[in-house]
Amino acid sequence: MNSEVYIKASELAKAIAQSPEAELIRKTEQEIRKDKVANNLTERWKKVYERVSEVQSSGQELTEQDEKAIEFIEAKVENHPLILEFIEAHGKFAEMLEGVNGILSGALTFDTEEQTDACVTCPSKAQCGSDPNPNSCS
Image (cartoon, rainbow, N blue to C red; front, side):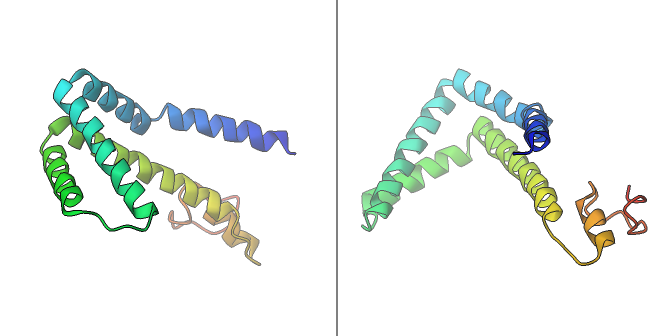
């Protein structure tokens, strides 16, 4: 095992955990926990979707009551500002992770042209417009 890879992975994990996107998720989660209405709604939302998962995994159809419960809780959630902030924060975090994953995947894209690989793995993901020389990628 390459210990350098694990060290870098640990550094990446720490950087992700300390990112503004992760901080925003933690902040909005705390605000939801402090707000009784928002906290109650999120708990109810979880229960409804646990029920949906159970029904779907057993191959059954959702009942009319299940569908009404989904519509009701979604309408409530969509109108609560703290929950909307959390959903938006989670979306930004997911977007950041997708970008990181793209960089990691790019590093594993092996091309016969070394220059192309070097540029794809740089932080700008070959979008900087610079010379594809590995030493000139910015």
